Amino acid sequence: MEIKEEKNRFALYNDEGTEIGEMTWVDAGEDIMVIDHTFVDPTYRGQKLAEKLVRSGVEKARRDGVKIVPLCPYAKKEFDEKSEYQDVLRK
Image (cartoon, rainbow, N blue to C red; front, side, top):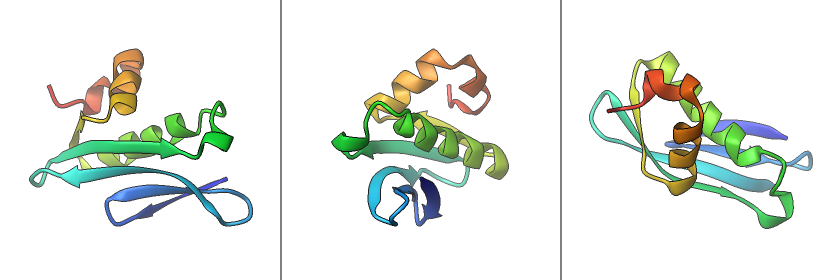
């Protein structure tokens, strides 16, 4: 599995190079990243791949010095469950 950062999204590819998931965001100004969508192909669910996509967004936010608004229900759940993400959560 490989995650690649593309224009306003992280795309998840299987070992054959087929896209199987994504997490997208919208920039809301210079310092806010709104995660609006997370998806993993149903045949690959249960492997914590969506969690890895959200983590990629958190790592990007830390690198870029921006805050995240987790609008997507899955991303919101991740932020609610992971106290280690609170440093990039826009309150």
